[in-house]
Length: 623
Ligand code: GCB
Image (cartoon, rainbow, N blue to C red; front, side, top):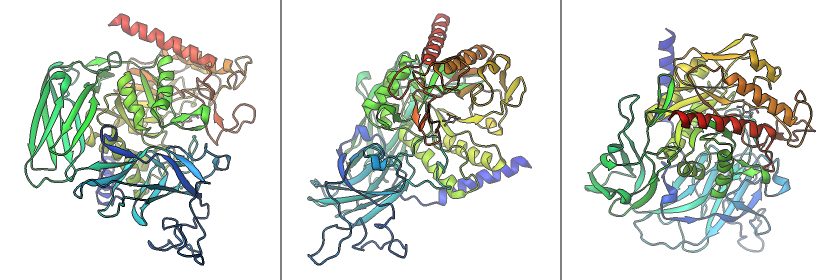
């Protein structure tokens, strides 16, 4: 009976997701591999806490062509015309970039900011299409070009694009306005309550993408899985997948795939929008952390051409292990927030990704958990070339409103976009549908539906979620038995034994297990310390306490069950959080970083590093 109920509710969620309308167009992928025109740089802004540019004085949404709306021209028609707003170079924000770090008045700001950019555009061919692409805007974006609304998007960490209607772009002085609002709401994803900074703004790249009338929208190309648990062939390797055009072609269209390094080229002919592809590569080098081999791949039609770099590997949860290319791996991970603490801002650039991932490398990691939302594409691309395995997550965090169908729809859209953007990244091996969600049948149905969606979109990776365990029950054995464990491929849990509840010596008498016959992963464990604060190890926030915590945890890990496959402790670096208000040690920072906010290494860094190095050595000796 319970199962029938569960299936019905999953069906229900699935039904909602197909009928709901999308405000943005389907996503165009591989933006870095296409011709684009950047709109990054200095944008003028208006800070609008009362939403005067959006609502009239009766708080009704302003009509499209109202001169008072902030998306309409700010130039008075004549000297008597009343204009109570205007964009000026006196007020500018850098894009990409959150607004919080750019001026002190924005540090705690949650509300609306209007961004404006003027640009010229050279129209090449009347047949071509032009899209406006945003890497991410936190949280809601309403986009207007030359006074016309292109659409809106919700979700602070996923890309979106709009096709610009024909005739709207001008050669001179295009007037692009984005209303950005980062107010938190109960029915958002994430919801009101998180443990990170709510950075607002146009936080990632903005560009125009010029495309022919018929173009390659997306593709998914990967190594075919062999029989469960087998090593994939690197000779005569089977590559499969699909290519998606933006529309059905009028006549047969030829699509070519080339891999120059392998002297490989194959053409596929299609009269459909989506074409399945399969081919055989005579001899390939498989992608792995030790050997992150990427192949330059060119996909082209008569008028379109995109270039990408793809690694070929398989990954699967097999019995009690995780197999990469058919061989068991142990994940020496670390959790990372998308933040550059030194500048108290969101990370977005290649240089930022280099900083974060090289710190993880220094710790001797072969894996990162990108918490708690999809990070910028530069992260997963750099992880591909550095050989770092990735856990990628949507911000279904803590107590979102699991009973609300619109919330589900929003979460599913974010999941779909995350998978679509990154499904060609070899580094990404886990899609996570959420973090520490409280057990209830409603939550389990919600999360199960997301897991089904992820599996349905991508059966080449594992799906997981960070679960909670009730480890303060006083029992010696902590059992991971969250009902969601039945549906994930990798059972992951967060534990803070010795930080939340008791002191680290509790670890010496504690053991872990799960009721699921699946690989088990510790997605978080950690303790806070203020860099440079030294005291005895019983003193909270001292480096000694954090070091002791890690020592006790590591000793406990020796007793983990045989299905334990890795961990991603919390967290790489101290990060901003309004929830952390200890005036001596926190002052708005979560201090569980192994690096502090200036990039200094705390004592615990060296303890975890030594442990990871010993695991790596053991691994190498066994190979
Ligand atoms: C957790 C959360 C993470 C928090 C962390 C903490 O379990 O998943 O987002 O920041 O604990 O520091 O308490």
